[in-house]
Image (cartoon, rainbow, N blue to C red; front, side, top):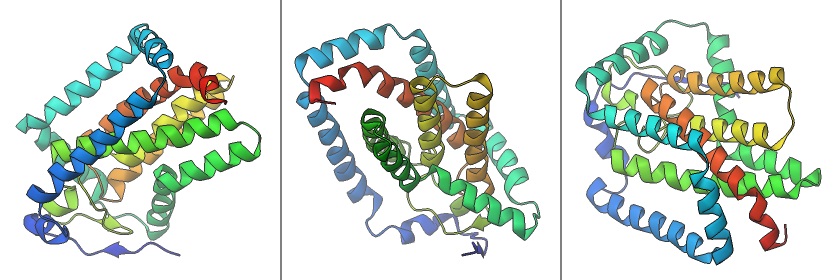
Length: 256
């Protein structure tokens, strides 16, 4: 199946017509459901697991550095000059004329960041008898998706093809908000998880991160995200990979 390039969408207010619920009705309810689910999971954890997890979390200085970077990127959304830079970089990377074969490659490459790819990887490791890694992929993917949707709901950033004229959209028009990039978050989460789980050589780790960067680039190329959406996704995915790795010693409490 070859991806199709949709026509440019010059109308900035199209978002309100795409959504089947108005934003003022949908967002509070959706946010409440996500937060309730996450709080329920934390309450479900045994007390010993919560205490040990918190201690391990405090010992991770690199994690707090990544959290600070993510906070700065998020706060930069209110910076008007940052938006202008975002638009310039996005326009340069997205609206140039590219050959059709490159569009197809980029469309297929961007699918590496969707949830289906993660679940296929989890199934593969389950069949290879690495049940713990399989569980971590599924657990991390679902919780990361919840977090990404919460942040999207709070930041409420329109996708570039809804605001900018002459945007090229490769494949289909993505639903939902733009910040952060879920595909990029998912890919960097998996790479960080694999790097922590396996004893990989430096060359393999570099290759995996280059693949993750490629997925991030494709999100701009296909017209789905601004550069800062992708940058935030890189950082958020890395944070989540470290967090899920911290949970690894506690899976035995659940029989894994």
